[in-house]
Amino acid sequence: MVPAEKNIEQLAQLLNKSEAVTLLCGSGCEGAHSEVVALAKALGAPVVHALRGKPFIEYDNPNSVGMTGLIGISSGYHAMEQCDALLMLGTDFPYRHFYPAKARVAQIDINPEALGKRVPVELGINGDVRVALTSLLPKVKHKENRTFLDKALKHYQAAQKELNGYARPATDSAAIHPQYLMHLVSEKAADDAVFTVDVGTPTLWAARYLKMNGRRRLHGSFNHGSMANALPQALGAQAANPGRQVISLSGDGGLSMLLGDILSARQLNLPIKIVVFNNSSLGFVAMEMKAAGYVDSGTAFVDTNYADIAKAAGLESIRVTESSKLPDAIDQFLALPGPALLDVVTDKRELAMPPKITLEQAKGFSLYMLRAVLSGKGNEIVEIAKTNLR
Image 1 (cartoon, rainbow, N blue to C red):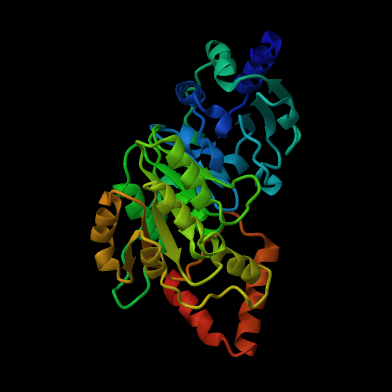
Image 2: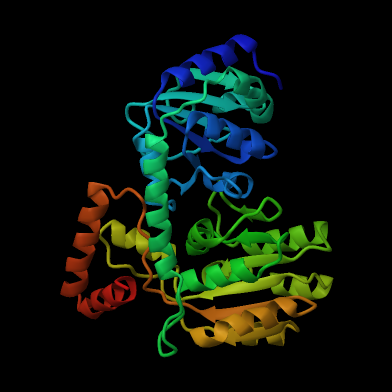
């Protein structure tokens, strides 16, 4: 769909008059990577992506400053909060309190219903992102002042350094850090791997640690947030792409809900690779309860050996409980020819802080700590601190 020329002229004027522009990119940027990068270069604009935009915009992008939103990082949040103009490209990013309070906002989207849906926009353009940017680029003036971009990139480098500090092996006497597991999977997976990711903490770790390259794909229940999506999505992806590596990044909660689908993988002989983040917990639910001030209950599972279950169903399986054995186990697991399951015992006490902490969340977590102590769970507070202060 070709946007109206007068709207492109208006957008160019808005961007040329602004001193600190940020681009927010979603899945509508598929096929428009080079145009987005060229626009960001001309404007000296940091590029923030929404989760669904990650596979299409994060890679080979010198102006990338990461993701924003509840599972994003601080550099993405601040690049949007501190801009004076925000250009939304092919995104229906839903979290309103992560939008800038004072910036002028323009939006390009092929779906007219998305224009102004999440935040008031000064200019909404109905059209294909790639086509619109191709028309816009000749009209944009190159900005010499890179102060805003340099500040955002410096923040991004600091945020990445902090994240990388968490993605390291634990001692063999401790549970494996899920960040380290996701980092290794990203490092060792095929260049054109298809990843499916369960709702909850697996999505969080994937958003922060999976590396995209333009050939990899990432699927999840990113609109509805329905549990147990990763395994059936992997089955479908593998059936549609028989020659590609397909990896299901499953939480133990999600896998438990559709455990019977491992029989489908065996019956259909679909060589999917199932990675289980086995923390014996509904981890994201537990974090939400803590943030709301509640001592989490009903979120813990009994210790379950999913490798034994998979083996009984006829799949190759490996169980890992020690960080030192994880790299070789992943290599062995990914090399298996048929459907296989890797059961990794991960630390349930990991916390994932959002880039913006509200006063209500701070009060809620403080209330949780008080209630935990009063209910005799003070040792849980100590263990959480030990796990996350590293």
